[in-house]
Length: 406
Image (cartoon, rainbow, N blue to C red):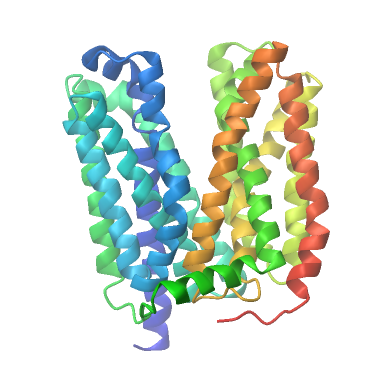
């Protein structure tokens, strides 16, 4: 393959990863706008529906590390394809479900496919992009789930459900077919992938590889920081509309204002990660964590409208790039490199989803205790501050041995 074709091919692969991540977002958000219809048709209680909505995250936490290992053994081409198939089957099975057990199983299956996409995407990018283009590529693909989720939320009730005569099962099957189409598209654009998977070396070698990663102080610190990043992103993301309503805004205006961080986050993801090269990425991380703290503190002050918008902009800047730049730091940490990027990313998302589950629970619990979001926003500001002070030791640990193992 010529150099020009190779360069063109990697951008096609990035488009395949983006399409799969868009399908990830579609499937992840597909049930939220259909809760009333599903509860009514299948006679579910709110508690039963809540357990279904959280099923994939529970599976994800335990599946992320094995899926990362599987990616490094199969290679990104087949590992990501398998993830797309799982997500597609999850969508189809949701549409076929006629009982609690079947819908729970269908949603849980997404927890097996999700980590293969989440961990596989940075693996593909680390193999085909370097320098500022690596950051740009990660920023591009990370917009996929947000756009997919927005499409599911915005199109379901006003457009697609009426077109399907209110048949929510057919709609979920349609999203499943979109995911399978994304998997097939990925396989097509990655058909000439020349990267070779690792050969299985037995359980002992696998355990030694895991231990090598966990022996790295830099990796351990990044995993701990990932918990904080996801606690902020998921906590603020799940409760932002209610936080804005508590500032005196109407439900409609709160929903509109809550879209500001989403739009700003897309711009942040497309611009800031490409600047996060070499030692400069630690400065970018500090700026992002600082923006998160500022956003929480402004919201805590019950700001006037102009300051409220400023807080949402700061939140969008942080939420759009914190995870991406932290993953960039992980895959370029000494001892990780391309060969272990899948396993390392599996560790990252396994740890991060603890914060992804804990963040919203923490905010909800503090709201129930205090009757307002003051303690919740203080907690988010504290988490952001801890992340901020972690940047300096992270830089010291990563730069102590600048040569990454490839």
